[in-house]
Image 1 (tube, one colour):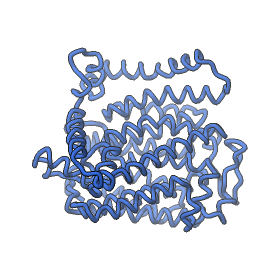
Image 2 (cartoon, helix red, strand yellow):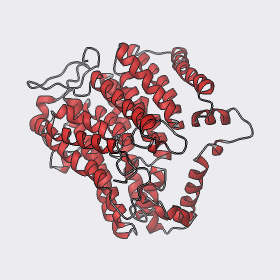
Image 3 (tube, helix red, strand yellow):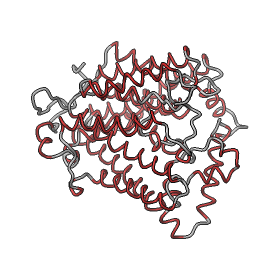
Image 4 (tube, helix red, strand yellow):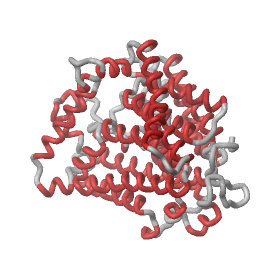
Length: 473
């Protein structure tokens, strides 16, 4: 832990970590959602030559404890690789290939940390699937997590000096603003798509939208507008199976109204925000999108990576240059980047990073995982009109934006990675034909969700499957 991180963050981290060990599993999962908001390494931590001990606990030890505690209820994942879902097989192969490709990488420590991030994602996915299956992810729980997250952001931003808010003094918890905004966006999607709300849910949704605006994440702001549009259209689809284009366009227009209102509010009351900068450039004929903040710098990184890829041999294009070797791109742009170099957070584009470091093999595996997740959500929506699938589609633009401009894979235990995993696990949990391959068959039959409807479940005493929020709070 760096000396700059407030001691309160360490105290909260310790209390949450102890709680994960001793409290009920359903509350332990919620505590991990909160501990994901705390990065004890600080924004200036140099991870090239060292390992943050506290964050190593959050990435390795705590997820394994959660896996052990939830698996005692849900059953352990099947040890037979052939029984796993195709998506799980592809992710496991990506982990193995990332491990082996550290052998020809110049960044051994960073490469092993990247493997740890990928393993952390796999473990948390299993934990969250169990949480969804037992009905632990409820409207009441999400509201509690939402206000707790906002409370942490208020304390960090306005009471403790806003160490994580960058030079622009952005609103965020004890983590980076982009990850904080993405997590708020996930909670917003789950609450919007989870059924009828109530004053508590509506107030929480409004606070989450305001938090996204104050965080100043441009892609999260655009994704919020798209979220409203997608949520309203999908709710209309659920009520009417026979649709006309005119009705769909009308619903899309209705969904755009909150977005227009948000833009007006930002321009009127937040004239110096990063989001207002985006709206100003969109209305200017002399400026382009590359003039937006760090986007020009990202394009420079992408161009250098593509230039290096164009000079590679066929074998290196197929195998890649090794895990975490994306740092070479930054070093090629100047030695000034060596001061705060983080090889796992250098590329800011996971598709380009996968092709650069893992070659065609890793790139195809990553695309297979993403496409399988989309197809799984489509199947869950078409068969049972599951609101978890609607939440996934509502958050999908944000996920794609993140994969194209952020370092999502290296944020497995951060708010961004944890939030996206929570949504994906929800889709997986309401697809019994898929999750039955991952949860042991002995215990799966007693906790599986019925496909007859969103509220019909079969369960053992004291266990509940995922359900509609309506009436669950």
